[in-house]
Amino acid sequence: MRNEDKERLNRQSQKKYFFHRLRNGCRAVWKNTVQKIIMFAFYPAAILIWYLFKNNLGLEDIPLISPVFIVLVDMMLPALLIGGTFVILILFGTPYGFNQMSNEFQRIGMTNSAGEVPMLLSREKDKKYGNVEILEFDGVGIPLTEWEKERGYIEAALNVNIVKIIEGRNKRRILLHVIPANSGLPDFIEWNDSYLTDDDSTLILGKSQLGMESVDLSKIPHILLGGSTGSGKSILLKVLLVQSLKKNAIVSIADFKGGVDFPRVWNDKCKMCFDEDTLLTLLTELTDELERRKTLFRDTGCANIGDYNKQSAVPLQRHIFACDEVAEVLDKTGLTKEQKERIGLIENRLSMIARQGRAFGIHLMLATQRPDANILSGQIRNNIDCRVCGRADTILSQIILDNTTAAEQIPKDKAGRFILHDGTVFQGFWVDESSIF
Ligand SMILES: Nc1ncnc2c1ncn2[C@@H]1O[C@H](COP(=O)(O)OP(=O)(O)O)[C@@H](O)[C@H]1O
Ligand SMILES: [Mg+2]
Image 1: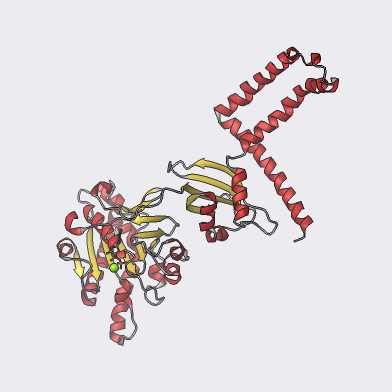
Image 2: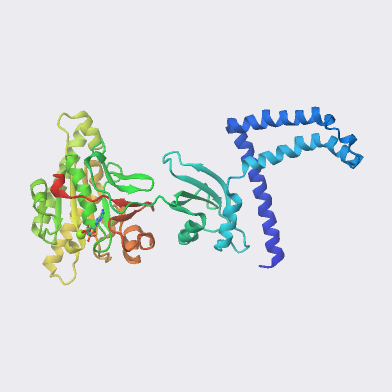
């Protein structure tokens, strides 16, 4: 791009931004009492005082001041009225830190081809999370993907932690949700029953910079957990299962690693299964239960388990089926035709629960570190909307979240640190089953 083109585009943007600030200023005066008082009381009063007392300044008596200056002073009233109003509106409409942020963006080379940097349009406190501030930028055509890629640089430049980056009301507007740089996540938070929610369907996943992260099974019924070995999947799964049990759900656990991760106490609380035959029986029982509830709801005119439990004297319990290392179960490589058929039946049951489980209170929680495409069929995966990924490489992250954010944002030395499908990073709870039961 030629230099004069760049200059022309810059001028155009400056003009646009000027009007934006003016409009913002008007809006600020319209909305806020303080601004209103300054605009309509203090400022007119100041001008009035100036007007009344300017003759008392005795300017005429000072020999060095020319008559031209005195005429200028006389003309200042209209200038102050019109020009001053503009200046005040622009000041009100310019978010604090605008210049500094522009400079910082320039420094890290966050510019478009015309050399323009993103322009801060507004900043306000998040209504839901008090410690979060939302910075709205005109992205000057820099796409969201680029912001995501430069996340680390932006955090360092603006000296904040970015909680999430989303598009605003259109693709040009970028919203950065930020918190102060010194408020990182703790590495260890122990689970405590006081964190339990009141309803029967909401489970807490962990703590993010926004507060508690949770999943409501009545809305998002199934959970897919990814992460490399030692990323903390089993512990997170246990935290979810502990909560499910405390909420009176019936929990079944398939653990094909021979039960090393789930010591004896779990046997007393849950149905455990360690081989394919038991697993198939268990899943068949669950799909039968699903069909039974279907008939029951049809007969009673209920749309879902929540509805049914409201009107029934004997509430239905939720069923949770958890499978740690689901790849151990569903991997078909090197199997005989007969074995493959049996796995096919297991998949078929899982798929039915994934599709229909929500209304009937039957839920899947699947954990995996091996993301081979032939392990988790699209049918199952596409029906699991709560996706959580811990420490992972780009392939695993891509399989679980459909993007590479886990590989980029979860530090390699952090266990129990996860990222949600919506980009929120959280620290999962640590749980010790021997003390909790
Ligand atoms: N929430 C957590 N907080 C702190 N450390 C954790 C947490 N979850 C896991 N860890 C650590 O990581 C190790 C592996 O966790 P685990 O759940 O077995 O991983 P995975 O099942 O992904 O292989 C644990 O023994 C523990 O030391
Ligand atoms: Mg594990």
